[in-house]
Length: 196
Length: 196
DNA sequence: TAATACCAAACAAACGTTTGTTTTATTACA
DNA sequence: TGTAATAAAACAAACGTTTGTTTGGTATTA
Image (cartoon, rainbow over all chains, first blue to last red; front, side, top):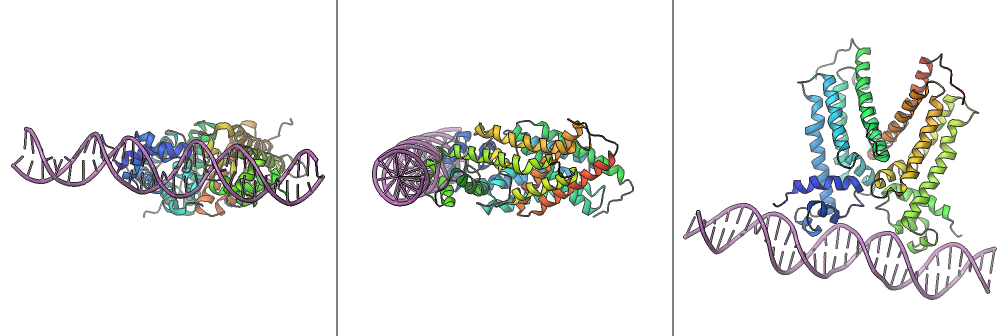
């Protein structure tokens, strides 16, 4: 059956995740889709546009399926943190291990800045999710600090995981973040979050 | 005057740091050296070999000029940590901001594994330096944990710094690491490091 | 004079992209 | 419902560039 744009976008993710943007050839993407490279241009006007649509897809996917967990009132704040950790972990472990946004961002931020807005938007969404959780147990300044630190720690762990081919770096860091969350909460027992 | 291999290696670092390995052309390197691309093959047999020599040079540079700080007995342990932070920061801020080893490692670990040993060696050296410092204020298991965490945090900060074009991420994380070190030291006042 | 460092030109291969044609799927009308 | 018209998707081949690499010649220097 004929492939849709979304099909191609999804199938191209592990390919870009393995080689990065510059080293991935359109023929590689096509091959992963069971097509010839020329056929890709029926769906995307250029390699840059394909990458842009992949980035937009992933940013939206994380916003809807991952970061949204932080705002789900069915669960306690701690439970949301655990679920958020698990779900993002699942994404970073999928296929060739790594964070797509971090990889492509690092590679293209200087030489192909047209992707920057989407990538920075992804990190902004991520931070907002963390800030929403930390705001339940400490003031906003601290919540902002903790959120930045959490993201940096996770990204560092994803890097070490990829380079050492060992998922433990990531799972261990995620556990630590949950433990630290409990500690902060206990320490600030008297803290009452402002509703807004 | 004629260029030596080391000259070319040094001049190629900021070029690779801007575009990564795959997207950097031999002509880019040559241009940064004031040569034509063919002339590079008088010094290096291939692009891969050039990258390998750059990685070896950088691994050795960090071992001798950066990580060695951790073992310098002229300074207190705290002072060594501060100097180590400053010196690595200086490297990660130099030219196009970023960690060369992390960038090239992320890009090549799967598709060009021939660089893996050198890159993993760099991170092993880095960890040993941290472990040596943390071992002065806590037991070895904790020292190993803290060291991994420090490296991941710094690498995450370097990533955010590059993507957001803002060096504050890195400087702030380095300050935090020094502060946390003092806290751990105070908490474990009675700890006596084993001499070995 | 012998070796070194570089230039200038060319190489084959791979690249992203375009083209014209064929296949497949969808729609419209009988 | 069956068939012709239409559009979408994919193929196969070629495009012009760019790539990493090779070659042969030319200064410079020891």
